Length: 325
Image 1 (cartoon, one colour):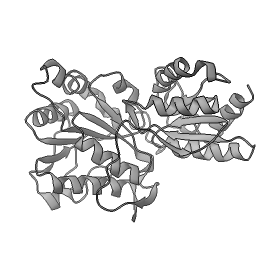
Image 2 (cartoon, rainbow, N blue to C red; image 1 turned 45 degrees about the vertical axis):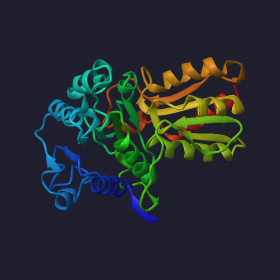
Image 3 (cartoon, rainbow, N blue to C red; image 1 turned 90 degrees about the vertical axis):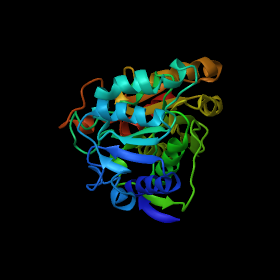
């Protein structure tokens, strides 16, 4: 075990995979000598050389297109989009090329060695161009996997799994946890299976479901609820596409209630897809309507960031409303 923050865990995952795979390249805006705007790639250029870790021009569509070309020729391409808010210029390359490469070639070609890393979410006073949570846009795209870690050990294991996966993966990193989340990380090989949720706290009265930085919020809300005699089961989804409906449904059939928390806006957020699926599978087990505690349907506000965030108090209030329904 080693104590490290999430940035250090991500850096260790990248370094270990570059050592293991000579075909792996890391590239993006300022990722070289500068080490990325958050320093996640710090030291990689010095260790592996300019040919394997290098800066790109400021063109997200170009980064994604270049990554597709590399991966289609058998390279392991790990591309950084500097902020998730900047991924939209690349959406054509990602959605229409990366995701469909294998399908449209009849399985003759693929870009399975492709991973897009990008920091997402608020909590750092970044304003509306540096705080968005666009994960739901990509969950509707067959051919892509979407992964979000909650802590350093998960970040290391899930990133290694994403890089090794034979499908293109978008790996969203909760930037407000980069240095705030510190914990034990196992040494050496750490490969966590994609597509599997994790029950991180057992409970009997209500299931709380989230991912990324919101898991800390859910655990705080569960502690608040416990003081009122409410037992919360807490689940980290980890992979949003494909998502682990079986684990969530098993929990909801036990507790009879479900609350989903995410930072993205309510309308069109991934919580809606989860709620629809779970009510189909668990309708006769539900004791109250499925609750969603999410961001507001507004552009991400700077001075009203606190009001925007789906925090522990909002979550606790929704828990008590669900249990008392």
